Length: 212
Image: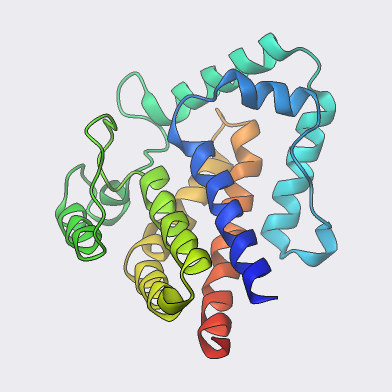
């Protein structure tokens, strides 16, 4: 039961960080057109996640042409997160916490990564406070907990600390801005799913810590 839950968490973080990591690949458009992204039982989810997955389901239902969907997703990602100019929904912790890029929160974040033995690959051009990198860090800890039973409690403790000191300080507001953005369509649903999942995770980490 615990292993299954740890695996589910790991897979969901993988799904989320890939949504924000880069301009959507063609494979994502193909999955949407072919209805290959699984939609969970909405009754088992909190309100935000249920609304987000319902929006995703409707988006898939309306998606017919792979090239058209891929172009639409790429344009939406670029407008929202890349610019030109200052993006309307900057996907960086320092922009929300400090009001500027490369602020003090990024330095604190780098220290936390170093303590956990994590270093950014030179090939990844975004700073470490990009939402995809932070979600990837949570995925990494989920993977560690799933594969190494002796490290589970430690990994959960690191995740709870990271939640409180980083993710929950800005990602809910980021998700609200993303949902409200007039330039968002597909990412409205992803915003709701992300926000709902993090609130669910916050409680789940505590429950798992008491069980293990």
